[in-house]
Length: 197
Image (cartoon, rainbow, N blue to C red; front, side, top):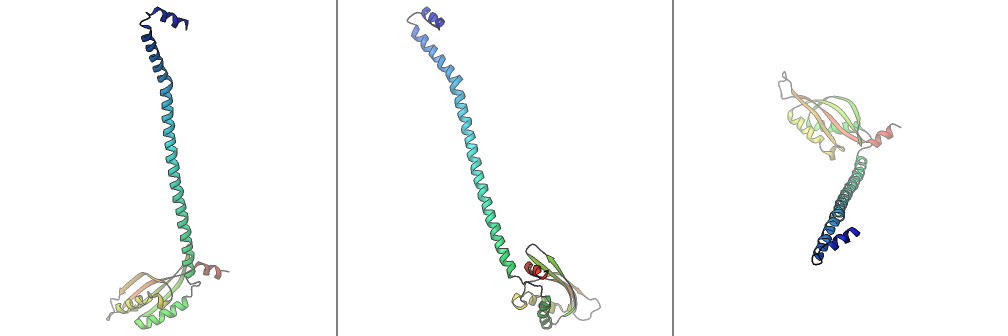
């Protein structure tokens, strides 16, 4: 400090205010460079971090909203599945189905040659029942028969016709066609549990 006063006393009195201003400016620049700029950088970094945290919070809220919506959708689907499973028949009752089919067979004038054993395929919410049916008849009678089977009101069950195969016999003189299909119907899984007790 004494050194500064000595140097200032060596300066001409008229020039002293200018030197003091220059020294003060240098001190202010030094203070700005060593103290204020690092503080500004630190504040900018903290603002960037705050912005990132806010963005992560927003993204997190969106993820939580999507999870809640997905959970609600899952619950809705579970309720719907339970409701639909409750509407399916509780037993296979294929004999009743075959009796109803028999009246359709007579009306459509086809001949059932063979009914192959029932397969039960347990799915997540229901049991799929499959029977292979082999038949003979004209194309029109087969078409009529399949159309009649698709009428849920008449048959009283949901029925799908799968793996339909039609073959015209080369030795046949009339329009007779041989064919087969897999008759698929469904039952409630609850009925399977009750039957297995």
